Figure 1 (cartoon, rainbow, N blue to C red):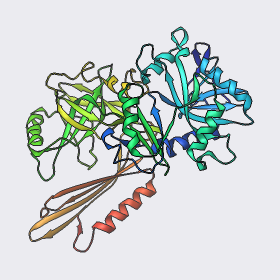
Figure 2 (figure 1 turned 60 degrees about the vertical axis):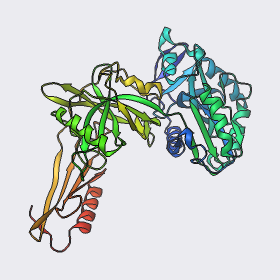
Figure 3 (figure 1 turned 90 degrees about the vertical axis):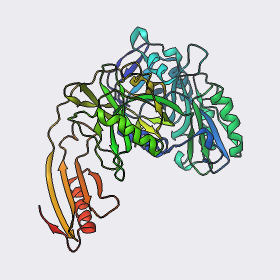
Figure 4 (figure 1 turned 45 degrees about the vertical axis):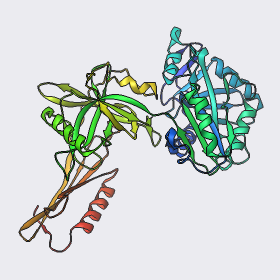
Length: 482
């Protein structure tokens, strides 16, 4: 395996993203990431008895670290991430792993958690990994360890994905037997979901682990973690179509160290009608300008507001990756005179099941109360402390704009199709190549205005979506006016 030169890491070497020049290895690692880790099902602690199926189960602690892959050859050991970063050299946990390579006849790839032992009595935290890696004299690599939880390649006669989990785990345990820094993750076998609450109480509530990972005999993998809260600043809102005086969704963000505010997600679980009405009364006077447009999942554009209101949001989990790729969101800059403008996208994390808990009248937006680093206590996000660099992106190009009308009993309905090429996908991975927007206005309906937004990676798929929309929605009686 070839590596590009990396920076100093104590007695070892840290190689930047893209340094692993083994295409077959990276395909294997990324395929595993998409197939297995990306399919974890999040379960709340109070759903242990009702949300998990398919016993018996293999249960292991959810270690608060980073997903890496230990690649063992007959004479070498190296750690590789899903984006091609690598760690090698004279590092204690890798030296221990290399001692096991004398048993090998070919390459073995293990998936596991890279963690850093806490300097106190607390359990490992994901933020400690970055501190331990450090750089040069600041590195504390002796704190690093690796807990393998799955076999990705090697050891078994057949491909590991076709073997039962207990067989894969047994092969790992035998290979790494006797290890202190590098070993198989401790796993317990239980017959029923009735055994899970006691394990959760012991490991998670007892402060020994971040959560539980439960593997069922049916192949499903469940991740059980305590819920937690974030304090976020409200950036904008959408109104209910059927009740414009009520808030439907909130756009929320966190403040980076450089003062920019990064979008962290949407929150639509806001409570009852009375609160949604009072929230609209609170937000509407705060409306402000924005040169950046952000659609909700329903296709409605958020109305931006001055950054004044802080809310507490309950979250079941954070996901820094989607489909094996890092999550990127837009970082914004606010000026009192001109409102919001987009600066550029940065790595972030998706919120799972956000629920508004309360308004935080006692807190103010800024790098203290609504700091971005709140999510670093739960997951690893690259470039979290970096300043956002403004990126000049090319303008979008309208490719198609077609409008139809239909008059029935003196009421006019309108349907509109707009398609455009963003011209940005090559510079910013958060932008699709093509976007289509369908508007359907019918004054006689209970909800007069409906919208739908679709994206497409190619012009051919864009045309296919447009043709399907027209075929489904433009029937007899519709007249094209534009």
